[in-house]
Length: 255
Image (tube, rainbow, N blue to C red):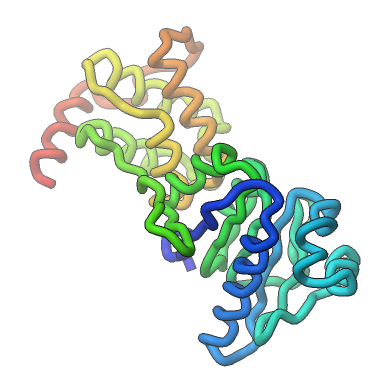
């Protein structure tokens, strides 16, 4: 399952909200019942310490202690196991992920995982997870709130980012000097021709639509922001054809 096949949800709450955490675990249980078989689910928290407090109150001390010891716990027909920023789920291959009070690093880790069928985020602070809500166009579980799915508004800029995705090695992003040079040249070409682009939207689009690793998408965002602010880059130019702008415009007209 590719990343953009997953469903993405959040609970519109903040802080240590016991009702929100109860709703979140009910969501895991409901998914298990819908499929009529035991499903492997993942509980993602930043650190084991987050199992204390509201989580242990909702699932019970015994279950929290089992998760702390990296033992799976039954939630209805689902079986849930622990994941943190440093601990990977043992033997997990596919299923839903419940993220409670995640920060950006944990959300990035989840975004980079394959086999995720559904994600539900319970935020401590909505501002912390808003980028994720918008990246995936996530919907609130019990309200009409939702994120803004990533859109690259200018069609020429979209063609340029398509070119970036096609030319670089997406398994390593722009870590190689030649791929980084290609990225820089693409955004400098757009900028010098007066084509507007939103680095945040490009980052989100690469993650949600193209399946890029979030860290590599962050690198692209950094380059795009640098070009917009006039940062001087050292790179070897000439990796794009001289008529690349015409190609992007022609492709936009065809599409």
